[in-house]
Image (cartoon, rainbow, N blue to C red; front, side, top):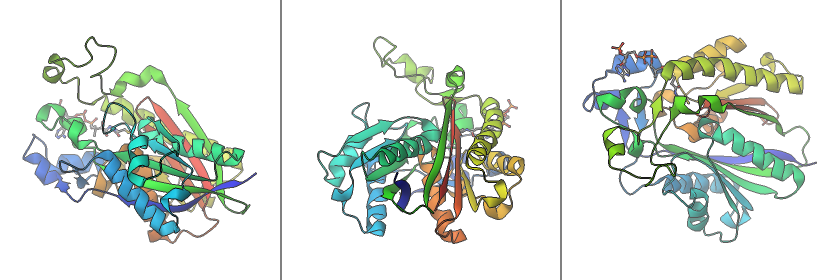
Amino acid sequence: MPRTVIAALGTCVPDQVITNEELTRRMETSDEWIRQRTGIQERRWVKEGQGNSDLALEAARRALARAGWQASDVEAIIYATLSTDHMFPGDGCFLNAKLGIPGVPALDIRNQCSGFIYGLSIADAWIKSGQYRRVLLVGSEVHSTGLDVTTRGRDVAVIFGDGAGAALLEASDDPARGVLSTHLHADGRFAKELWTDAPGSIYHPRVQPRMLEDASIFPRMEGQKVFKHAITKMPEVVREALGKNGVATKDIKVLIPHQANLRISEMVQRSLELRDDQVWNNIQKYGNTTAASIPLALEEAVGALGVQRGDLVALAAFGAGFTWASALLRW
Ligand code: COA
């Protein structure tokens, strides 16, 4: 059976840097509050005219250039996002058009912060089954256009940033490399603890003026509940992966936790008894970019830590749904 390897990564973040200081001009908050609670110092926000699929396109182009592939080498697209350019169709089709690869299937998934690992799991199954040999997996988000950037929405608005990460996944016969396993979970009892209520097809009509007034078009979060579940479920799902593969935390070269909050990453690290050099965080620069956060951090970590072929890399995510997931791979 072929193994699924990451042939190349590519990322793209908007040029516009929004510092904590900048946010204090729009809402009652402070650099100190944001840093202490989340570790975030700045994030990137798109300017008008740059969409989710534009960020994804640039990330994909960078990955293609790095791998030495043409866009036409891609046999399937998996696109993870919660912030599509339009209600439908999904951004996978827009990316397909922008890459100029008509006919190539585009699967859109919306598993929020776990989207990249859910997507990796699907790509791995496709590659192992022989259905496709080369898959483009993208995690991309534009949060900034959907945030309540007033004091009313400050608990959520300070956390999220825009960005995209792409991974080119390829079938390999090298037994020393590739995805070892993925583990996916969801618990919909918590669906309304972190969600955007409206607009939605459950409402008649689905868009109503009152939605602007009652703020139901903005994401809402029970921050402390999210925090508590994240610090339990992320270590648990990493242990599940380690147990399944008969390896230990000491064997991990690097863990990439979804960049939800630096405090969450630190608690996950402590719970798993990992050293500082075994965990990579870059939320300080980008905020929480949901489906994009793992590829954004993974690309940086691979370069900065000199991850070598065969090194054990762990990915872990937790987010809205609630969903959570892990992946273990040999680089
Ligand atoms: N700036 C200043 N004050 C803020 C603020 C902001 N941006 N956001 C909220 N506050 C205020 C609250 O209004 C509250 O004020 P009060 O005590 O006068 O009522 C106070 O700070 C404490 O709010 P609370 O919500 O209890 O803070 P917290 O310690 O739980 O921290 C989060 C809030 C959001 C940082 C924290 O809950 C968290 O990180 N949760 C996980 C979020 C996450 O990771 N989400 C993504 C998951 S993928």
